[in-house]
Image (cartoon, rainbow, N blue to C red; front, top):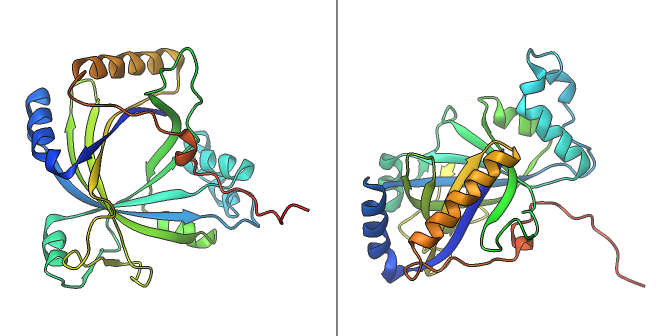
Length: 255
């Protein structure tokens, strides 16, 4: 799959205007949610997934997303995300300062993204395009533990979402960073923390099959959205290296 998106920065005082703007544009009420986003790094001494032979015993191996992820990690170690939705009742308890645990059986989404494609004549600089893998597997945490992945960060996203019938998603997001000492199964205390930055990020995103035709259709749709919001939203051009999930090899100082 490929992800294509536009990006913009929204200041705190502009949020009510953006909520009203996209509510009217999509003719739907926004979906407000919190998501725990944990970043994991593979064992640098292992190429790919050490337990990949166990997947070879499973049916429909060619459609197994773990196999695709193994092939990517074997070439270049990368950071991956494990995303967990936090329900409303847990959010309210966390805002009161209560200690709340994430249930073990809560659905988790694994996400990997490649370094975005470089600018070209066929891709406008304000559109980010990158390959991605997203899937749900109830064995996810056990598989990561068995392959000696290490949790390297633990953040929380507050977000508002809208969708159009062509599957274009509009997402307004801000981030909290949890304390390193927070246990993996606990939700951060939202009563005594502040967002990481005094602004939100706006993404207009679409996820399509990795075919030239579908990617061109997605690009055309995003260009149309940009034109529709010309003079209202300023879609930025970001350095693609800021979105690089590859783990670079450690090298010694230059001699």
